[in-house]
Length: 335
Image 1: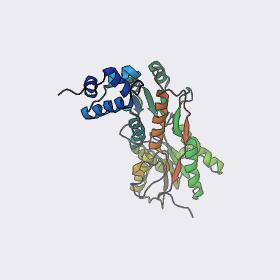
Image 2 (image 1 turned 30 degrees about the horizontal axis):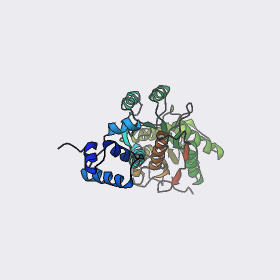
Image 3 (image 1 turned 180 degrees about the vertical axis):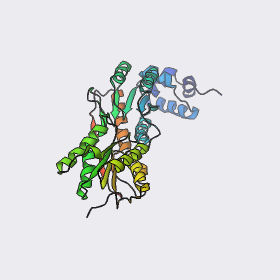
Image 4 (image 1 turned 120 degrees about the vertical axis):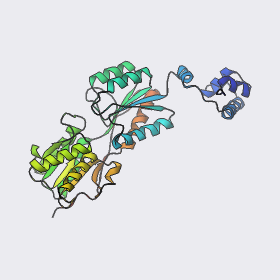
């Protein structure tokens, strides 16, 4: 059985196809009684307006593209949840593109999104390279950044102040009495999150009269396995330390695993603080003290901003959202 058409709705409600179309698109030129008859016929027949036909009328596809570096990560899924929640409420579908960690698929997916004629794009967590920006300009659709920003291009964004949050985490360890504090940060070339978090750590040490030492800094890629590798190197080669700040929860948990394998008790022998407050930071033992990023809220905000731009708002303001330090059980007070 073929699905009902707009002609079927017109026949059932006793009006013209043009009138049905006007009702469905909330235009004027009909009585309230006619509107009720049309809506009743739509409901009884189960009529679903064709997406392509809608697009021809309002010049939209009601879809947005989202570029994420790793869709399997808990970090990305929390942001995506917020994006989809708002998009669904506003009648938009989401096309999710997994760009891979190094972004090697980004150009390919941008071309696909252009072919799909998406109404807008949300770009998450990576660096907005010039080649990406050029393609986005060619698409002529609004763009919003989440968990990243562009120092070169005026694109609205939603993110936490990484430098300030990192400073807060390091200062917390200092106030707990720690004087020898190591750090596992992101990649050394990451100007979006890696460098600001390292700068926050360094500034907190200097502001409290503590020496910053390159030898107490390890580098990872924000993932668990690299957190373990970086912790192994620090324990083997760095001057002794009693506390560690890891620039992601995954790296913090990887570091915890390495410390525990070496017989170190947490927090008795080693205090550790993470960054992100992902769901498994509450599931490990002991539960991880960490910096909370409101990831689902950031996703919702980015989605709302993009849809405002799609619907004709001239501009929206970027947002720096507040972080929060969540105390659990991996940091102890030094005597």
